[in-house]
Length: 388
Image 1 (cartoon, one colour):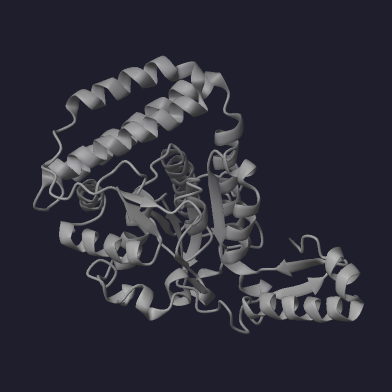
Image 2 (tube, one colour):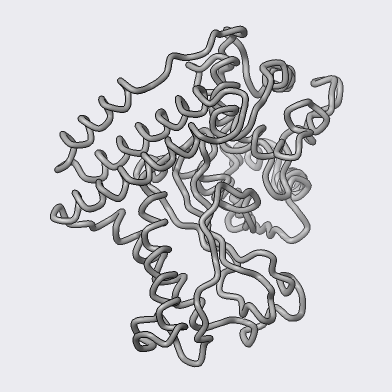
């Protein structure tokens, strides 16, 4: 909703013809900033409403309702799920939260996924009944094909998890899906069983986040501990030039995950605190700092800079940056889209350039300090960050 302040004074001072001309010019300016499939309408004397579709709509809504952002514990984003495997060729993927935003929603989601996968496999092997196997007639009777993986980009969860909002989200999606946005994107190419299984998982995650009774809190703590410990062991043993840094970042993520559980279930806060102290004691020392500059995000820029139909940098005249962001050492990598997104998410006004590099390297893959420094220098030229 857009409202022109003090528009009545234009009509009173210059007449309604001038006022009408001004309204048309304002409408043209607003329309020029929208896409061809967005919708703009005048809904009052000096009020306009713009219906913004796709991911941009999520960003607009969160900016408009900051009071809701602080109340969201975590979320599940379902995107193009339930396709019939034989037609769409798409298998189910459950993507975890961004590595910069570890949260207990990850072990919760993994636990519900494991339950559905195990039950569907038992039924497919001839054990148990259709109800226990989560089979919805006339849907398929096969086992559930899917996996749990790291963050994948390209939908609304990018907006929710970005700096400025920081709402942890797990992402449900089928990929690849050869019918999306084609004439074969039809109800008959959906699988009732797959839809039911995915809906059950989503409902289970939401119930756990919103209504888990205190009597079940210690069981969730055990599940969370197991995932945290497994992640620390896996990262510490992963190939790479600096296993100590990988272990350090995994411990930091484990601490954040456990602390999110403590906020969710205050009754087990003492147990969580004991686990956190144990992890802090085991954390390796930080590596030396070579670039102590601290990037600070511009307060008026909220959410991701580049997401599905919108590119902050494309709106800037070339002289303001002096370079093509997509060709920077960080963004031009094969995993550059995620690294550039996460670099800005990690710019919390406390971490230095070197510390952001350490987080990216320990949580994703090896990144040189020079690549991170170059990216933030470009962001500073574009007005997206400043240094202190």
